[in-house]
Image (cartoon, rainbow over all chains, first blue to last red; front, side, top):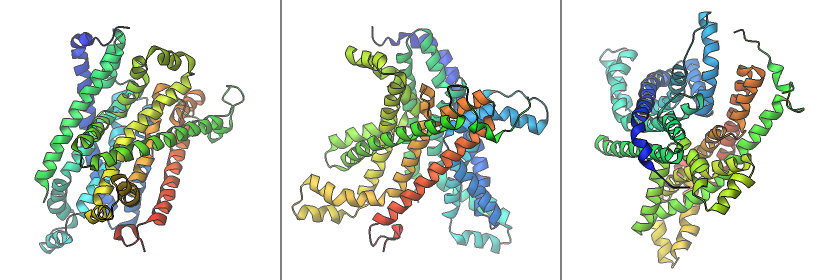
Length: 224
Length: 248
């Protein structure tokens, strides 16, 4: 067997690029949705209403104890049924949407814990001062506490996003063509799957590694 | 597309031999545990070694461990699994290659790949925890051991590591749980562990909600019981006099 001929990669680049766009799209939308839902969950966990706190707590525990791959697979199979029960008619839904829902719901559990820790790290006096100025709880949260908390937890949120960037490769299981899947199929076509696998690994490595270096530098700058 | 709920599905015959769907789940759980436990042992041994390397004064040795950690942390688990399963066997010498590809049955070769992959992947994480644990110890510990004439290996083996491990039990616990969750990627190279059996049950019986509910319950119970077990161990071995551990 003649080893390692990487020349087949160049003509395949446009296909791989499309895969990378899918990967990035999943990541960005997953992070935005995950942070939004995670923030709501975190506020629920911190709220004085016991049942709201417990509900959010159960959500977080549930999603943190099952594998992401299980969630992706399950949602892919189940979302069409659930949509039908809700809307009453057949709603065709693609792998992309079901994967996105899976990422948002799964990552929200992790983002919730980050946001919660961030809010809890804000001194109590901030809330007291805001209330003394006549702000409501909601106003104080929105205008005083959360902006400070988000600033503090930006490095952690970014780290979690890098993890999600790597985890998007799991959509392979439902056949969605992300960067990994594009590399696998382009490689298989020309019988050079090993070369494409190495290339894919290298690209993931370079992006994750440089992103985490940036996060580390950011962390130093943000350090109080 | 009407859905027929049937919670008794697990006791029904799969139509394959005399097995019930429950048998599939039990054998799947068995594989999941077999992957996770062996991979964890690999990760713990290699990760400890790397963690110690990273704290050594020799910059070359520490550098090797750092490179290892960066590589294994920044490539997705699934890519690593494909590398171990598809690529590495091609690089083996011909005899070994034939043994791996022809003589081994497909389940065994998939099992070997996933254990090696998950073991080495998790080792990078364990390494970081062990390093953090060692670095968290007061400098005086090492200096005192040195002053008493301990050799380098004695310092690590008798003084630093026994304390470091006890400090890092909580993060190690979550890595341990992660191994169980991550073992589900084995389903993508055809190993019939818990997730693969769940998928198969969903396809054979068409009772996908029941199948995935049971799988979720199993993962959840597994997680909770392992967590309780680790908490008990943590209490038992707590370093006396440290606040964070509730030690006496």
